[in-house]
Image (cartoon, rainbow, N blue to C red; front, side, top):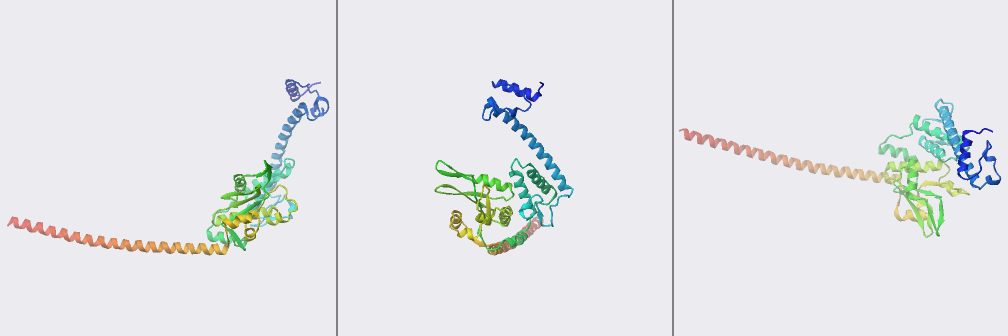
Length: 349
């Protein structure tokens, strides 16, 4: 019976390993004797088939991704609902939830990267959506003035916020090692959040006497772009049903991260993050921060105006002294010329 080159190669490798040659087209049929599960021969065969299946999965993923991307390109799949509203066409189970463009891109990125290898189509759909959004839609906000940023975020600015802006990450996976709980480092979590476009300045995991608590504090820049990132962070987790309300009401949290921007109830809570926030941060409303910024700006302008006035007066004094010195020097030179002229006339007479 003839064998394919792959089967002959497998026989050759099995022979080198001191195992009987395989003489059937489907080597996985050998489930007894030296080939029953757990033996070296069976592990060898499963590893070979696993590599083959991986190549097939990657090929299928590329094919599906191209097909779904073409559907998005030609408009047969609808994503944009209005100028500011977008919807994931592949997640009808989420009650047709509306997204902002940036939020939908983050959703597509998370699902595309986190989907299990068994669900090739779902992974391909969201990878295609991510590519389409990134290439054809304006997902990068242009820099805006402070006034525009304040106006755009005003709708999300009700109540007191923890100041400077911070977020909370909950349900970080931990495991017990040598009597203490350990979990992901702040650097790893920061890299994950930065990849989602939230631009945190620092992430501090919270520890107690038992080790890693499963919570972390996410710090954002102390300015209005930092506030925009904090609100985007909050809305993205909420859109994926992993916000504060979901964390509080979920019967089983699973292994997913939950996150939200820290507000007054977090600051005053008796939790580990509440104790940490009350020690190192303040509570302020957006209006208070805007008023404080306005006072600082007014004071800065006033100080600069005073400095300019002092410099102007000093310059005028210097100009006046320069003019006096110039006149005095001119008079001295005139007197000198007159003396030379008188001397010369006396010599001639």
